[in-house]
Image (cartoon, protein in one colour):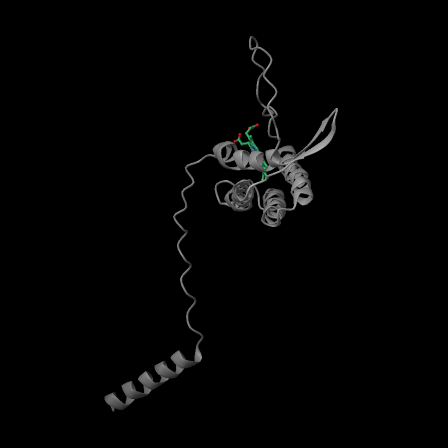
Length: 175
Ligand code: HEC
């Protein structure tokens, strides 16, 4: 009798097991991101130098003799621009990481905007398309500025007390 019962319950267990969806996989542990760089360091050491490479790669120089376009010439020069743009495409992701993102709406949208604008520069560099590369510079600049405006970068914190004796603070370049 015992064996039959336990046989039955084993059967039921197996049936139940078969009918139930598999248990949800345990949530993956957070990846071991290295976030030792502060946001300011990511800006000054990763994003800003990369943006400078893109911005400085193209220019329209107007002289007495007329207009001159400055643009990458060699494959190597174009690759440098492409790589800097790629750094910014991925840099947007760095800004979205937990511990760096300041909210989940405006911040994320700004970081994506920068990443997308850099993506246009990246494609332009791959195609050696000077006018598009030039235009992407403005898109990138506007993306930086929009986030800096939203998060009041370059402005004193609301509770910052003016230093009585300090010389006027040098204007911060809020690019
Ligand atoms: C998603 C928001 C966001 C985007 C996009 C962004 N920044 Fe920033 N940036 C910040 C914040 C916030 C700080 C202030 C960090 C701090 O002081 O802790 C900052 C600081 C800086 C600084 C340091 C100078 C200062 O005034 O503190 C530089 C330089 C800078 N950003 C350049 C750029 C450039 C160039 C781009 C675009 C290519 C860019 N940033 C895009 C949010 C952003």
